[in-house]
View 1 (spheres, helix red, strand yellow):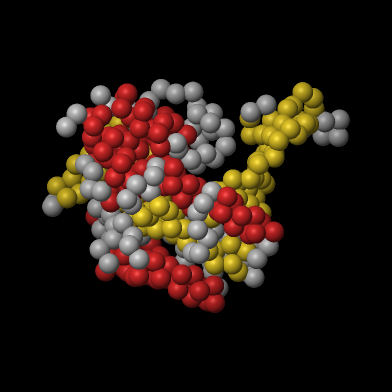
View 2 (cartoon, one colour; view 1 turned 180 degrees about the vertical axis):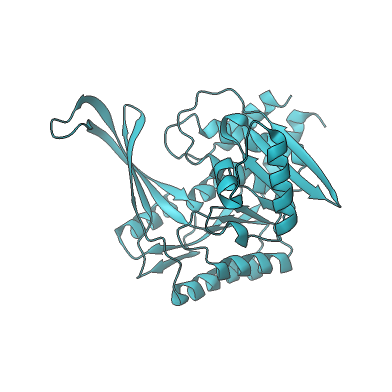
Length: 336
């Protein structure tokens, strides 16, 4: 089968997939404006506002990516019983994503990242959030929602999206991985530092280079592939991780896969692009990779598609999901 036909068939297959996304959600709130002077009150720019916007962020941005790729996202998370929580639910409904998996807590704030953009450049970010672990009541209620999907409905792959905001407690992580394993569902993880070593016996682990350095507590030189190879191999062995995909920004993407006692490695360079903002690129990479893994697509094509998708969303200011049709078109052109 020619690559064009193969890619078109793959993207058509995405439409039959159901993806359970579990993790920290947030609102990405933007103030856009023009800067042409410095404040007389302090040495800071004055932003003349011309637009405000709120977008789904964190694990919810993964849900947007999954939906844009043609699959059905099932989102499970926790938000606060506050104005931002209500706004978050409204954003889900606007984007036609179910809110049935969202637990609303009276004891937490809904994470909101406020970004001020002046002349298409981010000038300031202000975070409003609760990042402590769920309390016992919240954890039990959240696990009940997750259990309804994992054990009672068709799920092709689970994505655990960790932003260190407290939703993914050790108990939640263990339950999700063990239950998914018992149900024969692959688990893909996008980690952060706090729970880095809590993820064991999973199909795919996708840190970026910074997260890998922090999680392993060791310096890894992205320009020396042998350093990356040894670090990933050791971690895979220790944590029983089948595959590790590491995003390397301008140095591309790296995949290490262990299968039947052998390890295969793929390192693809980044495609030349005009980078505007790297925010949300990891969400896009894991969305593409998870769908490919669930369909048993070979590692070379999975890595190549994820690499293209992550780069594409970096061409836009702000956190934006991939557009499935554009990804297919560019993949056909680049992967001839």
